[in-house]
Length: 317
Image 1 (tube, rainbow, N blue to C red):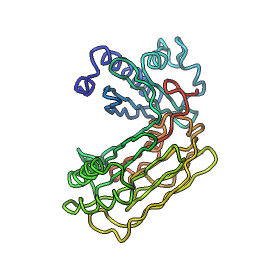
Image 2: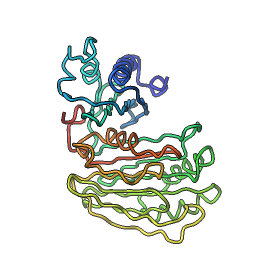
Image 3: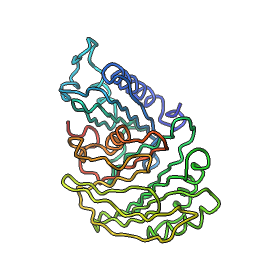
């Protein structure tokens, strides 16, 4: 079991089992089925597990009421969501009539760690029929600066996964270098692979700006409540074809969210379609985009980054 291998411990595994059972039961009864994605976490040396539950069902009319013990629309005891939220060290949910439901819950070994200065949500899923995902991402934080990489190996399957994993490994060796310098190093380092689309963002919260460099079909946007700005990538394949690597600088206000995704996700999404999108846990935001905009014919990855601005346990309801 993933939680046991991660070192979450017997108590955490027991709590996680309850959460998974409650969320999965809820999505079957009310959502008409869906997906349950599990991800291993690490924060300051402490292991954790994230559970992301996604459905495209009818959504909840009375979201706050659904957390009251005894509330049920199908004649059950009505303790599912309330129990999951009480047990989880971090919990957030999006649900609205006609828009389905996405829920995230996290369990940590030894209890919840101190809240980090940043929040990150991510989904990376292989195309149907493949065992390995050809997309990979990585994050590195250094004081007020955070470096976020997303790589999409050319095609899919084992060869794509090898290229993406090598991009992540090389990224880990390039600390304290500007995005265009890192991409140049990756371009030289990926020549033995089939190549990849790669984008790298350096988020400087103190300076309220993002430095960004991208080659290939990695889309990136800075989103606020009132505006959306697309970031520029150049055509090419890192490791093979790259006419130019150029770095751009963009403002990144305190209420901004950075979203990066591979071309397994259509670029025609609008965050305004989801009420409260920019206030949701980034994992919930990533789950919504993955659920509604994955093309279904390629590996899909989406990474959502945001400075911490709200209670990580429940979020607003």
